[in-house]
Image (cartoon, rainbow, N blue to C red; front, side):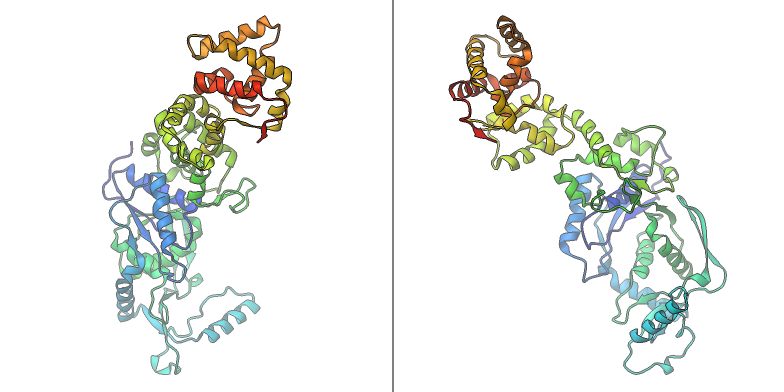
Length: 480
């Protein structure tokens, strides 16, 4: 177990412009695990400086997604937009110290500058034209932005826990905007001020922020503040190595919940995307807290694989507590039935769950496999099931039903013994009886073991379904 350090403070800082996507969920998990494994603090900050694109629905989706994943945060979430006055105060302090300046370049002027740089094949960056000019030269009608006076000599160096030591010449970094012309703070300023004020000790985020890290490093230094330790995590790619897209799995966490994945399986899978502990694949929460280190995060992009996620989810379903699994699966069943399960059906579900969970990789699959247990009579049949229910098979099932009605114990071992004896007495292989029996009881040609099905349905329902089938003429039933 890592040494306890209550001074460690991490944060997850999403922008509420859409759903909590799977990459963001992994970033949250790494921050949460690092803090929790060391007795530290995990904070949540909503970076809503882009007020036009930020929505309450997106913020709620972030909260719901984190709660579903089991990633609890400490204290109240911080809204970045609510701290605007503090951000402006810091920008003014930089102005007062001569570490920032007013830039009066018009949008048209800046566009012309960029086009000229593009034509010359140069990097497009602000050329510092107002860096040392006096405000008396300012043109009329232009409201200035506030720019940071970035150092031009030397280099900026980040000792990143994941990426290693990386340096950038300061000449490569231009004078970034701190306050827009309308007085609103930019993301770059807000992040630095908030990380400092919240006491963040470790910034763990995607490596798409690495360029920002150098600009923020300069700002921390100019303000005389300690720079948090940095850990920039490679992004998640699809199985083909391309940037993760919706077809690969770049969906919202809510989509995975709707597809029937368990939060503990998602946590386990995301943990293994770019981090590992030997050959361990199934990692409990307790083991994750004991083993997790930022140093063990790899530098190569991880590849998202739905098949691996499904297999892992199947493991967690098979090992889930039956009562808890029923409560998780129940909404999926009821949604497909279009009604609530009755008390008697819930009891039947409880009897069925041990067998159902052995054959399902998602809660959706489990629910769909369970539907026949709650189907209303007479059943609808698949085309394949109908082919098995010939007149001869119906007659056979009628005889079997009469025999089963006489047995004392309606339990799996006794049911199996009776059906096998029935088949032997008729000179038939077990499949010649079991296959039409399955069709008659489930409406399908696939199901859990047929003796398990008989036991779960119970005497009354099983015999009623067999009676329906035996009494009908071939071809009369509903087609599913």
